[in-house]
Amino acid sequence: MKKCKRIALSFVCAVLFLSGCLGQDASVYGKQKVLQYVDSVCPEPYQLEGSALIQEDPDNMEYYFRTDRRELEFKANSYLSPVWIDGTKTSFYTREISCDYVEQVRQLYREEVKAVLKENDHYLEDHGWMYLSSFDDLEPVVETILEADKVYARELDYNSEEFL
Image (tube, rainbow, N blue to C red; front, side):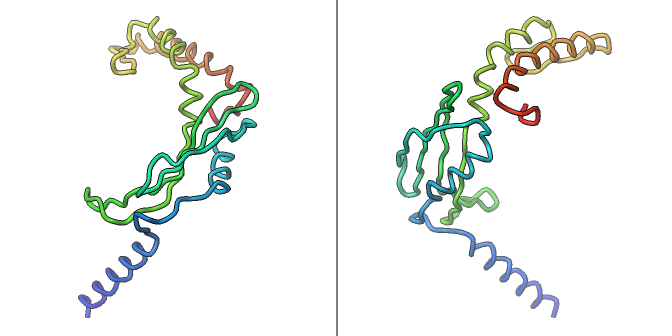
């Protein structure tokens, strides 16, 4: 009896899982859904500059945006992503949307933040982190991080504190 229940449960789980999956020739999310997603990621006013189908089978539609105030360019993609099970790619796909707005914002400040961090001897540029050898190192490292944080403070003109 237990074995039948396990098999039935496994079957139901498989059906539910695969019912949300699509084939390689399925359509991606449309423009309206992409704009809704971008609205949730980018609080700045922006304009859609254009779009292009950059890959077929499976589809990958790329949308190009520019913010109104600082003319920051960023992209969003609506694409089919393969479903992986235990490290094995299946023939099933799911619809996905991605947006690089946050990465583009960080890129604006990256070099300036690195310059501030390099001023501290504990910063390892190759790894992108700071190390502490003793508790005495804590205060200068914290001061350096707070200085780097001031660089990002300019972003408050465009985004909330929660964004930072």
